[in-house]
Length: 54
Image (cartoon, helix red, strand yellow):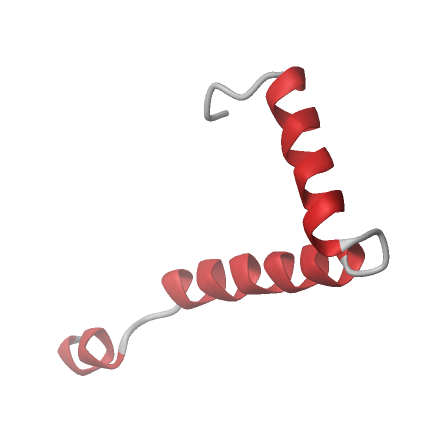
């Protein structure tokens, strides 16, 4: 993906646990997933200027 292996992902997970605690991580993951899906959805929809041209 981005050149990240298992050790790098494990280090990031440990840092996330230390910074946010185990109770906040699921909420952060859900928020990040919703943000990414919203961004992808907005990219796939036509922009207002494209609708005028068609």
